[in-house]
Amino acid sequence: MGNHLYSTRLDLSEEVRDKVATLLNQTLATTLDLKTQTKQAHWNVKGKDFYQLHNFFDEMAGELEAYVDMVAERVTALACVALGTAKVAAANSILEEYPLTAVKGKEHLEALADRYAAYGAHLRKAIEITDELGDADTSDLYTEISRTIDMRLWFIEAHLH
Ligand SMILES: [Fe+2]
Image (cartoon, rainbow, N blue to C red; front, side, top):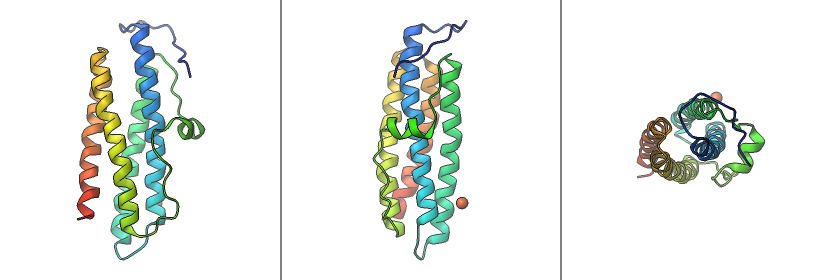
């Protein structure tokens, strides 16, 4: 999907804006997907740790919702078009679909650990790519998200010991 680049006074080249927007739109799709997957866990988890996990997953979903907005608005700050519908997210996300039959806390925690790890790896790569392209602001946004996701992966994995 090619980017529509608006004209802008921004001092980043069209080439950089095009490459960064493509990457950000992939991140947008993946973040939206991960948010809905985390909500899926929030709604469907059962077992003796229900209440704690129900709240834990909701806190993570809320964080991801904020990142969806930040990523989309970085695309528009680059004078490109943010691609953030559910259908685009489904088509462009790097994540596998959530196991819809998961019930117990452990099943949800393992599914989320796998997906947070994949998302975290994508973010770390994106920090490097945007840095090399000379877009320090997008790289900084990725760094911020990456720090939170690494922490969340720690929290999720801590439940699995
Ligand atoms: Fe809820």
